[in-house]
Image 1: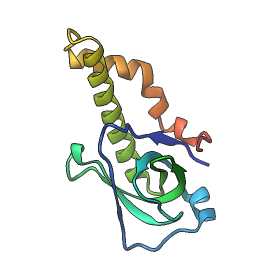
Image 2: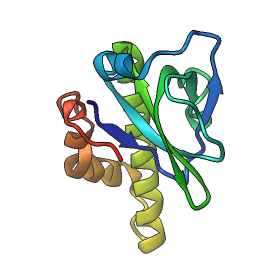
Image 3: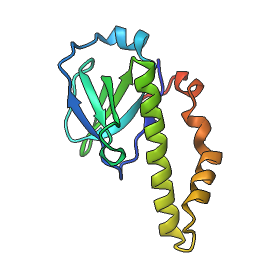
Length: 144
């Protein structure tokens, strides 16, 4: 089973259906390399083929994956998207790091408006959290 990196709630993410065939749940567990978890307004069926788009990163930030799980929340759903292609996983992992760094910098600037050196804040985030985004860390079992 793979680990799912949490996508920050404050950064928009879109899931769009792909015309690819669905994967069976057992195939997701054997083929899934890792994934991301994000909040969505609607439910998705396990195995559904989707594209993950992070608009703030541009049109190239589109990664093909499959719905691995979907958990109902009070308002919406928490969705796990598994990637079966190493390039898609790498791109999504890098995109998620950029999103996390952006959110970290924004939060630090809210807490201390004089901390305006985003390069320093980004380096600080990397020193604190980059290990959690390593390829090896995605192999550990963590999901709801």
